[in-house]
Image (cartoon, rainbow, N blue to C red; front, side, top):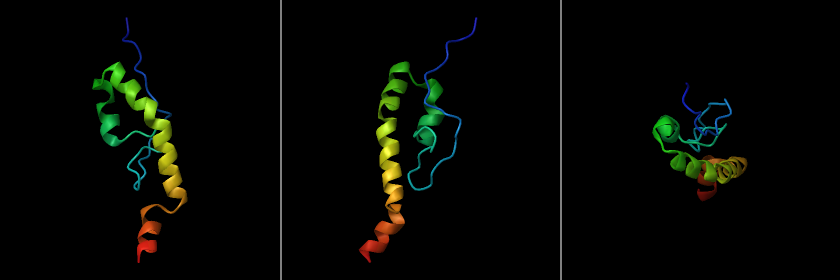
Length: 75
């Protein structure tokens, strides 16, 4: 008998964005991805609940130019 599948937001697009430090596919941090199998189901569901908003903020920041643009405006 095999173990039940873990809940996961993974979409097989595993690339960490250098500005946000989030996976561009699922929105998790490297720390979250690494710890995922050891997390409880409740912990995984709690992380997953915030991923949509997290990715939206990161994409919005990127569309405005991210940190580089912000630094340029401060000069």
